[in-house]
Length: 249
Image (cartoon, rainbow, N blue to C red; front, side, top):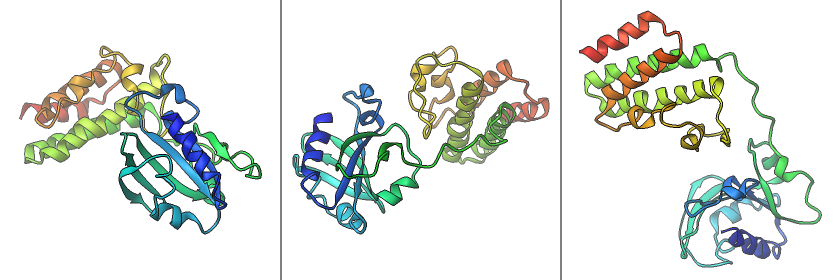
């Protein structure tokens, strides 16, 4: 898969309006994470005015091999699958656009000798911690997610209930673990906290199978998550009693 990026870079080097190719994710600085289930994420940096051409056309993408499927998933990017099964997600930017993007872990696969320095380190600094990135905030968000989700479950809105109970509340659980528990050898994704959590926390610490049992398991999931929160944090008795009353209906 990394060779595919190298072959793509070799072709891009022949085009006068390209500047650099940056690998991201498991194709970036942490490419030791690459496995059979990875896709290739990358940024293509081009000259001013060239972005639409490289987004709308995939002739350059097909240079290393035939592309069997592709579609534009945003103004600057596409997703595509090569005929041999390699799946790619990419976006195309100018240098100025790249400098305004938040990203991390990029690797220069190729760049022109006269390309601006530090392309892989571009992007604004990490957002500072907010007053709401606290145990108190995430705990109470999780509790109110359970409360709202159970009301929607009782109304018969099971899908939105599942999102509140098995997604939003679990996101807050992950935030609580980030703030209070160590995760040995865990490479945390700053943009998606759900990535690789199974490697970070064993089931006895994070019982995901019970917290996320599926569409028909909202009540059971809420009961497990409430119990998990009560075992580890000082839960307000008023909201806890309200959630339990809904569980008992």
